[in-house]
Length: 488
Image 1 (cartoon, rainbow, N blue to C red):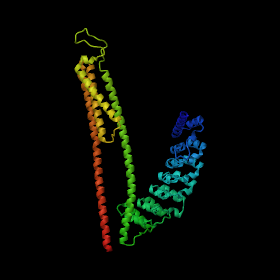
Image 2 (image 1 turned 90 degrees about the vertical axis):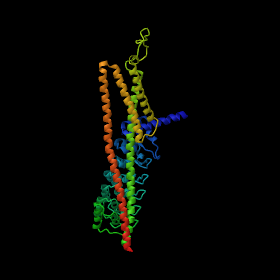
Image 3 (image 1 turned 135 degrees about the horizontal axis):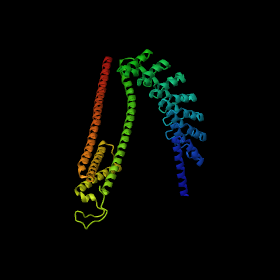
Image 4 (image 1 turned 30 degrees about the horizontal axis):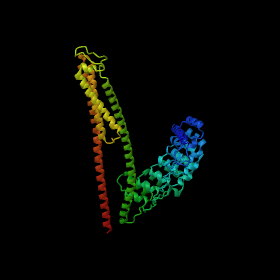
């Protein structure tokens, strides 16, 4: 019974693997073939287990016909959630597959209200990704879904501003013409205008104050208006000036009453903005760091593969040259001849005819063989080679193997050539190899020079930015001190 159970589980896993492969490829023929073999193959995707169904895969990749076939046989798959709480509609909306979205909505339009682990429904995902056509389709089917908030208390309008999606914001404002909707607040009591001013999104600010009924002087939970946030950022560049002028033109005012409250407001708002900027900077820095690490890992993987291939080729060539030296072997024993002509079967002809050259041949070939084997051993040993020094050591060992292989080749050419041609062949091969080495060295130096320049430039920029921050902080402190003296 145990063996039968194991066999059945193996068959089920194999069928599920084929089903997922068909979903990835969008292969309808393969799906129909699997259904002919086992009409319950789709039932193997256990419902309600937060697993990825074939419908999740086809919806994410935009395979329309495959999606239709799955929904025709299993319409309940439209309600299934994966391990992140995302439905097929979430994935189709995120990737902008409009026809797939329409197909899913025709089966179950209520999935517009489904929320993932972050509390985001498909409309939120469409806004974040900037899929305006998909957003329009979703809003037309379930306009009530735009009122849902995320787990952080953000409305869909706040997501538009947070992710710089002006077109999506325009569509939502034109579709849902409601005063309370445009003036909705997040968990910090901030309206979308507060966020837009904090991020200096001048186009969104202009749209909000000119085309909507946004409350320009609304205060957030800390008692700050949008103008408070703008004034706290100063007038350091053209964007700051444009933001403040735009707010002044529509009658925006500050919540501060006197100089002391102005200083307090500036410090508090600056702290709020710095926290928001730090969050953005930290997330951006994290994304850039991850992207850099992935790129470095890809490059390291490519280098490791290249080193493994070259080392394997050199080891193979050195092994073949060792067991089959140039000139071949004696085929028979010959002992009744003078000592100079006597030989044994299986011995190298080159060792008898040119013993000095043969010794050099064996020496260089053995070094090449052992060096390439050491590279292979280090690569397969599982040691970490993420640092550049380790890679350079491996490349140095491989250079030794390549050079020794070149000497082995030169000795072979020398032994196999006639006497008048030996020097010419050896000189040509030696000069060619030397030229290759010089070209590689010059290329490496040429590649390293711009890198050094970039590193120096980044270091100088970092020093300049740190000094700017220090000066700005000292200036802010001096301004606050002067304002406090005036109050006294």
